[in-house]
Length: 482
Image 1 (cartoon, one colour):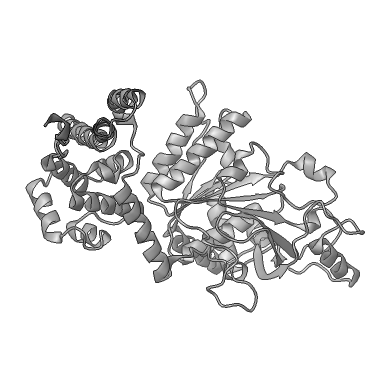
Image 2 (cartoon, one colour; image 1 turned 60 degrees about the horizontal axis):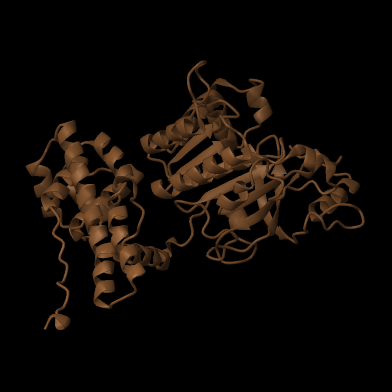
């Protein structure tokens, strides 16, 4: 009987040859790999082994390692065999011409969208008809089929459930294996006093895809603190792209070397070093440069040319890809903006956040506090609300660190720096850490936990824990420590 007829099971058949050709082209040519790995999501490959291979290729590009069959198979955790990848590479040792490659990439994305439509609105429509759902529901599903095919090339972010579960379980396994924390490399700061190293203040720290905001008043020590982060991350062999847009790249590299050697910055700036020290400085710069690359300010270099926030952020994304970095430091990030209205800055910050996630790069963005607001407050410590610019600074940040230097505001010895943890999306906050500070050498040590006083809650003397300690030090007649 017609009433007993069942819907035919939908079976989707993709074209594995197209997937093979795109994979082989990315293995053969680094420029093609760099371009396509940003454009094509792993779930565009419907064959399981091809999807695993593409995920591995994307990771290879992020790490800056080779794309040979052995490396790709290793990064895929054995989900695709070396022999199969070698066959693909040997069958197509050179990439196809640009029009041919474009055709196959288009076909790949079209197959993906057909699969999305068949498993989504088409399957939903057939199920609704079979269940005799209301007419308006059936008509809506019928319309959604056409909508699904409209503008399909621009919609690449609907997660396949199996892929999403697989990727999240892989992340859980990495955390269980000891990769739950990504230190900034500042051990005295990240691990509380007297506690095991695995119980840290900062969780997960400088993890891929997240954003850290460092804020403070001009002269508070933001750049020095960021430089200490760069040195700590470099010691852990993480590749860093340093956007030195406040100071010149050469000056910043010199500063990193000087801090690493624990030399007097004043002596170096004034040229009071020997020939032997110059050789030592050069060697240390070379060592640091193995892991830290510098990006000069590429913005506003030409007059009359059309610029925009979108174009400048495209530049940043290109440099991140070219450098293959794990961490991007922007000092000050706002220098990349052409349009600085709050809504423009908000949109740019969301784009930077998406960039970090898509490229698995940890971004450390430096931004000022609103100086006029700070000057009017009795408590001068940085706050989340005091970050200059759009409220999106607080929204996009996974971590916010405020740098406070009490000696900027009171006649006390310049020997203590306070780092306030103003936000941790996955960890405890607010927290305050008191550090010993040598401004001439840029040395930050100690890392003692102190009570965090809300900036609005001042004591009778009009200060916080750090200010009280500085005042006590001053009353004992302690001089500047060099």
